[in-house]
Image 1 (spheres, rainbow, N blue to C red):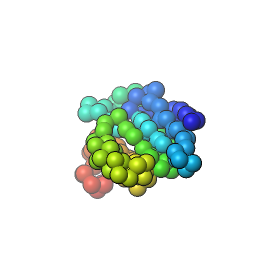
Image 2: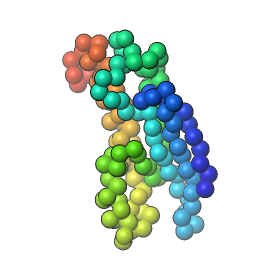
Image 3: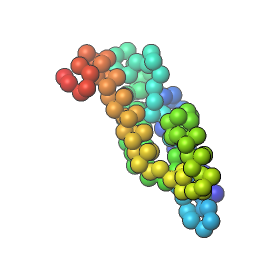
Image 4: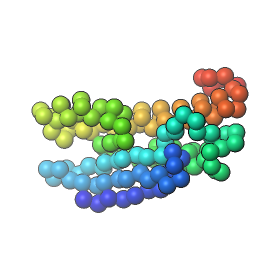
Length: 131
């Protein structure tokens, strides 16, 4: 197995995304553990930012995470990637139960949208992208 770290700041300055390349039953898989895309209540992104450059960090991180094309992904919170559902399906489907590239794309898109909505709100724009 090959494990690679990518610096993906935003959530914290030191957030790190991990990518594992592994082979199961002769089939290669790319596994991602994305980090840095989410924010906690109270973070300031646009006005009086929580740290200098935070908005730029988030945007670079979102772009970097969008460029990844994992077969399987895991996250800090099990509900993000349906750990329990996948574990149950794995009893009959094996590793195929964990393959979820579309779920990964939806997860990252949702984090990106939440970030931009928060920036809009801080800047005084109406929710939903209206200006």
